[in-house]
Structure formats: structure tokens, C-alpha cells
Amino acid sequence: MKFEMDSQKKQGIIIIEGETSIQNIKSIKNLFEQAMKSTDTIVLDLDNTTYIDLTFLQLLYSAQQKCLESKKQIFFKNTSLEKIKRFVVEAGFSHSIVIKYKQ
Image 1 (cartoon, rainbow, N blue to C red):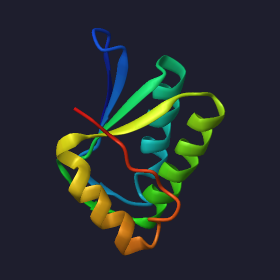
Image 2 (spheres, rainbow, N blue to C red; image 1 turned 180 degrees about the horizontal axis):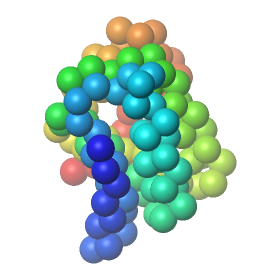
Image 3 (tube, rainbow, N blue to C red; image 1 turned 120 degrees about the vertical axis):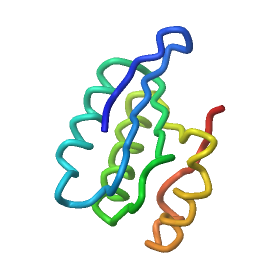
Image 4 (cartoon, rainbow, N blue to C red; image 1 turned 90 degrees about the vertical axis):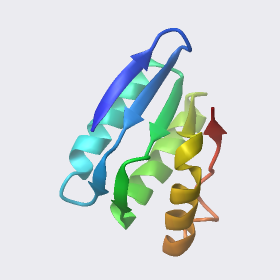
């Protein structure tokens, strides 16, 4: 897991690999906080994520709410789109989490 800045596109990229579970949610939360401090546009790259659990979706929902309040945006990397949609629907969060993508 890591956070990278793309100064050319003026966005922060959060790359999450492996599982998003309660065991590593604190690290992921720190990445979100770092990204929100550093940029107005955050792109989530979940291409190499093998499992997304409820704690991640709750964190994602919270991050989206904070971004709305501070006029920032969260997008998903285009190639991660189907994976995140599937997990969001399976967890029953499709009414809460907004899924936007950025190429």
C-alpha cells in the first residue's frame, strides 16, 4: 500500500494491494488522510486488491463524505471499476458509495 503524487495531473494516487481488512485499515486510513492533505483529487488503484471487506467500505464512505465537505473528489482507476462495484453491491453499500472513475 502506498500513496503517490502525480504532479502532472495534480492528483494523488492511493495504491492498495492484497486485502483490505480490519488488520490493515489503520494504514489505509493514514493513506486517505495523507492524500486529502496533499491534493484535491484522489484516485484509488485497486487493481491488485484481492479482497475488500466492510471496514474498507465504511472508511471509503467516510472519506467520500469528508471530500464532499472540503470540495475534493475521489475517483477509481478505470481498471479497478468492476472490482469495486462488485464488492460495494455485495456489501449492500450501493446506495451510499458513489463510484466515479478517472482514466
